[in-house]
Every structure is written in structure tokens, then in C-alpha cells.
Image (cartoon, rainbow, N blue to C red; front, side, top):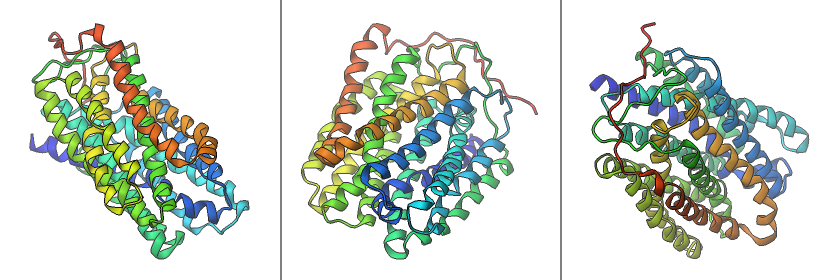
Length: 401
């Protein structure tokens, strides 16, 4: 148990570090637009390109024939992800946009490689309840993303874009630590049946329905993380304040996901997911209506506490879902496909934000959470979501290599 707990913390550290680089762009969007002579739509285009690369390659990585239980791909991904802060060394002006695009591509590719194999590492931890281990891993990513927003906003406020390069060496600790600690990844045959949770039956729901819900949830989170710093900046707040707001949402999500993960493990996954999606939207609405007041950012803690757990729960349910895809493919789709589609939706909403204002786009965030709830109520009711799975023979294999 202790060894698996250490491995879980190592995987969480890798996820935190990788997504820290992924959380930088939204917080410094106003400065990037000025530095590279971009409009809001142009800035959102670059962020969306980064999101698409990050998530598209998660899907591709999930389908590659890599069946090793060694964590080398995660380590390589961390090194590539750490290239993103080098944008601080690029000279100002539109002519450097091609180089910027190259850095975004390489860093996004690195972040993509971390996720499917990171989840395989989590699913190797059979002595820890899956609702808890998955929640810890997914929350660590959002905490890293949120910390990246806060750190990058604070650094750029004080030192400009060039100060970001000091974040690059952060990747070395988890990149080296994972193989040294002996972290290993779960391996599953293509047509296997997932094993049930340790102590409570996890419902076997259709993966397609879970994917739609995850896409709606990811769209909401993408809108919030990408636009809250700029939205608050338009209200007269600093970039570091906007980054801190995203960080507070992440902290609330971290605590909430752990709390609701334990609740789901004992009381049922669907009831917990439904309650989360029901309680959260009013907090987001309240924040948007009171955003001009600095104290309103604390409402985001409550919003994160209630809402963010919905995504880790969907990932846990996808682990046990009925599907033609194997474990690695499902993980690639649920963490890459859902967020990739969310990125495409973000770029399509850019012109709407320029014409009608950012508040309209941010109100779509709570609406996406609400639509995920309605879709789940309509499509999953016939699936008997609280029915425990029948005991089946576990099919996750541990390579001895």
C-alpha cells in the first residue's frame, strides 16, 4: 500500500508539472496579443491550436501499439512540455508567429504523451480505490494547470515574458523520478472486460454517452480557464489576480474531487455525479454577476468544489465502461478527444466573444455543465447506473519486464 501511494504521488507530480505548462497561455493572453500583434480571435486561435495538439495526440497516443509497462514515454513528454516557456525569448512582432506555433506544437505534443500512460499508471494501483486514485490524478492536473496560470501571470506581471524561462527546469524532477521509483503501467488486452472496483460495483455504462458528457464538462472548464484572466483584466484586475482566480477554482476542485471521490466510492457514482452537476452552476452565475468585486473570486472555490469532480468521475466510469476500445484507447479518448473537441468549440466562439463580449462566453460554461447533467439524466437512466457490476475476472496484466 505504501509503495503504491508513493507511485501515485509520483504520477501526480508528473501530471502537475505537465499541465502547469499547459495552463500558462490563458493567463498571459493579453500580453501575448500585444507582444505578437494579435487580436482576441488571433490569440484564441493560438490557444486553440495548442489545445487541439495537446488533445489530438492524446487520442493518437492511446491507439499506438506501445504496450510496455515502463514510464519512459511520460518522461519524454515532460521534457517536450517544458519547451513552452521559451516563448519568452521570442522577439516581439507578428513575423515570429511561425516559431511560436512550433513551440506550441512541440509542447502540446509533450503534454499529450503524459496523460494516457499516466492513467495507465494509476490503474496499476490495485490497492487504492479507483475513484480515489483517479480523482487524485485528475485533480493534480487541474491544480497544475491552475498553478501555471497563477505563476505565469505573476511572473509576466513582474518580469515580462522573458521571466517564463525559469519554469522550464521544473520538468526534470518527475521525468527522472518516475523510472527511479519503479513506477509501472497497467496493460490490458484489446478485447478485455474491465475489472470492478475494489469495494463497490462500478456501473458499466456505454462509453459513448460518457464521452459526450465529458466533452460538455471539458468545454465548460476550457472556457473558464482560458477566459477568466482576460475577463477579470477587462474589469481592471491584474494578470496575476486573474491567474490566482483560476488557481482558486483549481484548489476548490482539488479538495472537492477528493471529497466526492470518497463519497462516490461508498454511495454510488451516478448519484455523486448528478449532485455535483446540480450544485455547481449557481456558483458560477454568482461569480460572473459579481466579478467586478475582488472578493468574488472566492466564489470560484465553491464552484470548483462542486463542479470539477464531475470530470474525474467520468474518467473513472470510462475505465469500467462498455466499449469496443481497450483501456489505453478509452483513456486517450476521454482525456484527449473530449478536450480536443472543447478546443475546437473555443475557437468557433472567438468571434461571438468579440461581438457580444466575454461574459456571454463565460455564461456558456455553466450552461455546458447543466447540459451535461440533462444529457446524463436522459441517456443513462435506462442503463441502471447504480447497479453494481457483477464480479468478473480482472484483465489488467502486469508485465514482468
